[in-house]
Image (cartoon, rainbow, N blue to C red):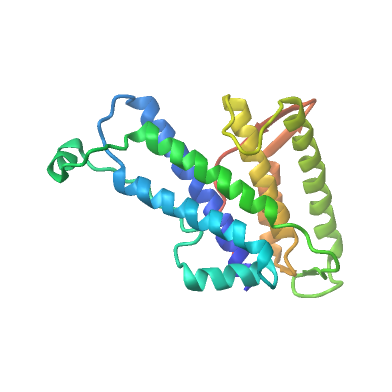
Length: 235
């Protein structure tokens, strides 16, 4: 159950990042594009509402995060399901006689809001004391590689948090510069990796995935560089 949850979290982040990037590229290439995204906007609003509802209800529900997620998915199948960005031509919208048109820049704002809500979701998935970690399905076997990756992850998280403080980074509002956006995405990458490393059972392939993700975050002399290319999580 935990593997399914963590896999879905990883996939959701990759999908959100991909949709944000693709939409941003479309806007850059054609700022005056008349394509309308009304239906897609509704889907992103639903994505955000379901996620926000989960965040608000979680403190009052019993069980672990994974158990709460499983119950919520049974009730709301679209929880953490990222909409695919698809638009319709302006002529089609005229036929529907819509009073309001959602253009690409408007949709981008909704995607940004969804990313911030997902970041809040990640931050609330906190470490529980007393958990037993198994690597490759065994309690003591090959503990050293896991500890090494955890150490690298913790160091990078600390450096990213230091950079966040220097930039007066606000968690609940969208960053104002490209560098700050990349810092936000790096923090989210690190959060996702940290969650994978907290799994009760982690396979060799999943540990290698964590290593690959961490290698894409380069932090030296107070500067950072992030490789945005996606890596699918091995469930």
